[in-house]
Image 1 (cartoon, rainbow, N blue to C red):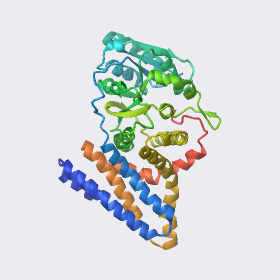
Image 2 (image 1 turned 60 degrees about the vertical axis):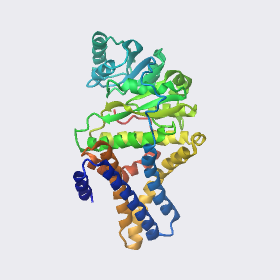
Image 3 (image 1 turned 120 degrees about the vertical axis):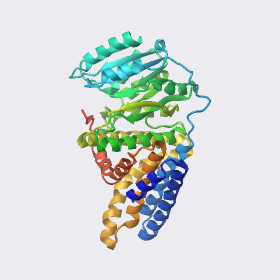
Image 4 (image 1 turned 180 degrees about the vertical axis):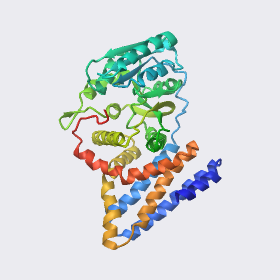
Length: 432
């Protein structure tokens, strides 16, 4: 099936309309298969409801994203508030100098922004590299870089809090220490803040080390769709649930309203040491501020290139996802009704996924002697749909890696969620 779709895509390489026709044909076939699956399994309300709902949920992400129009007339690209970049850093001697200098080279009035870099107890030459960047930024770009050295590790959240408090600017932009920004990124981020309701803006992150191996190529497709479809769908209602740390801007005065509770956040009696970006986003949404997605504000970030590091990162993300979704579930119902329903479905469905997978691939074949053809075919079509969406927007041949990742996520990573529940009180970062 993958081979056939690849041939079709190559043959119709430049016809976007045709790609969308194929996309919607696949959607139609998926619903036929879902109907057949329900008839085939029968008399299991939970499985039948899940089978239909998960498909509707995923397809709704693509549909809602289509209606998101970030180029609204109210967002003025000439709006130029003052800005501080916050760069909390630990053991990033390879990247931190370039990260700071890329920021300093931003196409933005130099007198209107500065950089605050925090060395969070690094054990390598990070501090020395930061000082080199400080001198170069001042000499080559006329940009002030303030360096704060913690001496001992206090955690990324403490670094972000210090950056916010040390700033006297209108907007605080957090950049991961292994991320690089495009020169026009800042203009594209800050234009949204002309609207006083907006408290945060999430930029779009591409993978900087995409070409390293198969794992990084898989993540590159995953990142693109996660931002382009999922964050765009949430942004339609001003409720992006995670302004990712690789590139996120906040109205500083609004962050100051929540900084103490956010910095001292605890869950089940344990101080929270990860999920800082999702937690801060939640804090602003809870105060009824809006958080939106800026697809034109582009950064590049490094992703795990080894399986061990990747799995540890995913476990940490799932733990923060669980914790912050539990927290958001207490207030998200006050938002737009369509968005609220979507949020609760997006929370419950992944939790049920392992049970459904066991029933479809183990219980059903064992008790009936039948192979779950409909379930497997539906799963494959959903992965193809995911990859086709990527291909339509990028024309990148890496779409196939997206299909592989989607299958990998559906069959392997789904089991991390129960383990994340068991280990949710563990405060360890995991990838350091």
